[in-house]
Length: 209
Image (cartoon, rainbow, N blue to C red; front, top):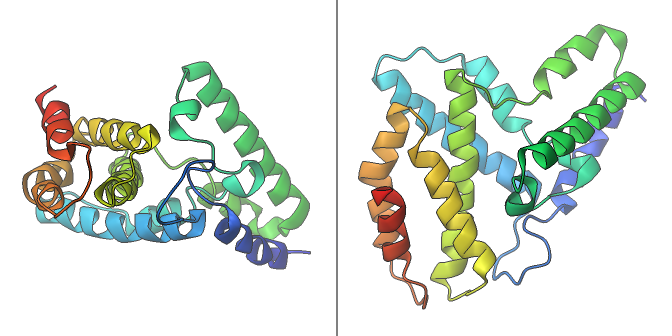
């Protein structure tokens, strides 16, 4: 089927709903999440460049736009489950990468195979682009969880998501993280909310540790 099979498969990301099985005021698809991650990453990378950091923009766009492509095959596995143990996380990643590899082998023309292997790989690594992807991915979890809590959703899943994503972000050594914590996060916390959950207290606890 060639590259048509890849283009056709992208519609699957629109039908995979994030955080399945929990009540949500707003549903978010993996496709919508991927688009937002690209937008966050662009701005985060701009902040890094303002501090003299060299950005490989081609790599950044490739890894951010395709970072969840493998979920077409395995669906969205909740973060607390996925990261409950290093062994489980490694197994899930192994299955996901194996299915992506099989898809490329079966469908992508030989002259494009190496390109697709590179673009659809796991992009989170210790490079500045990989770290930006990690921040952008967790940043969308912060915003998704906050939006639910802000509307009064008391599902513990979203409290855990907000806390764990913010904890992960603050420990990533990037200039854009410092900017987020100093300028963006306070604006988020100061938004009007009807939530019975004390979001400000949770935020302060995370930042204090």
